[in-house]
Image 1 (cartoon, one colour):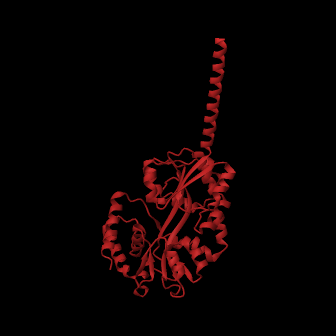
Image 2: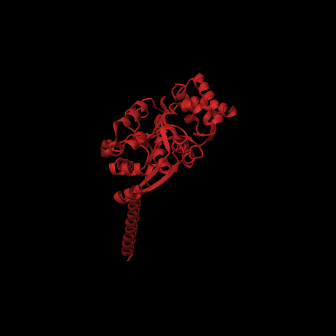
Image 3: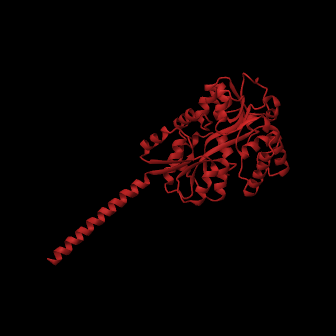
Length: 357
């Protein structure tokens, strides 16, 4: 009888063990079918999440941030583990310096062949050997203006934004580095200068211009121009197609001195728990069909050969989405200057704000 009871207990324990193992195995399998994405907000067609989930069986958990500066402490502390991020060029550079990114395995990225190599060259300025990041979107800062009020060719230089006839008709960015990029280019300097003398001259440019500025804004610039509240808005080229659909009198120019460009990229954090899933996501984003959907949704430059081919057939839109190389060659991306020079830029920004005319 005792042996029988012991046998029954052993069987019962074995069943419990098998059940627990089954539950654990099922939990691990479910956990492996997850992808945690951390991206700038509204930065790809949201329908693509459902498409990716149905195709792969991987559940996408999406968190958004508004600025790269908001994202950085989350990444550096590592308290939340994301599998894939979309961040700007200079922030990729900063994360690499802190060894916070994982190398990509190109064997798992067959759609990489769809990325135009010009944009990989831009990426290599921040990711030297293109080992850690893949381009997602590109953009350049320029001047959108109302052709009913301003003739084509009237604005060719950043210095034209100092003309008194544009009093209270200009919307400028509300950003330290973006404003200094404009002022530095107007003066013929690099947007990444470390010279106090050059920053001082750029500050004088912003002070001289400030009486003409209707508003400093990142989000409202496009809509103010569309609605006719202002005649001039400094915006990214990706805002132009939508703006012209709403107001056909608007046009766009990249000043002759060149401008600030950006390249936002996909990358995998070093502490990612689902690296293979992340690579599946990045490869999915590089598909021709996916890139075309993102272009139609965002109207920003998607550095994919399929998008380039489509836009090249439309000369009117091409000049906004893929500007002429003679202008682009004069453009620069912001770089991570380090704390010392960030503080210097902030010092001169405060000087500008205190002494606005």
